[in-house]
Length: 95
Image 1: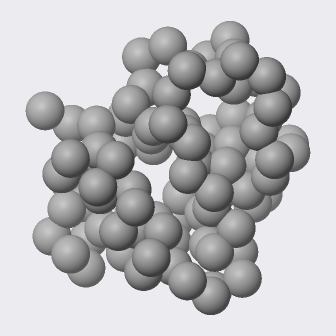
Image 2 (image 1 turned 90 degrees about the vertical axis):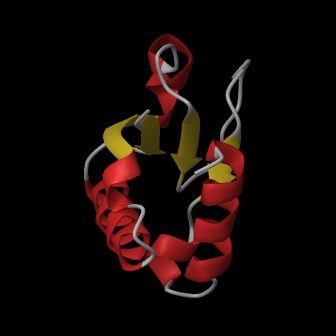
């Protein structure tokens, strides 16, 4: 079964796009790119959009009552620690 990841940033456009591209590239290198799909949104939309997803990756602070596991995705912006974040995503999704 394909796992669904919701990637959030401040505006739902720029940094979430960068994070999504880097995540998919890293998962493809590990042979797992076809096991996930990604969508993007503003961090302020998370509570209303989280249903139907398996995991949230955020490039900014997440507040509120979010029920899904959240992975901090700042590493996709800085380039530092990407492998560790990808390991965490794989572990939390069980892929």
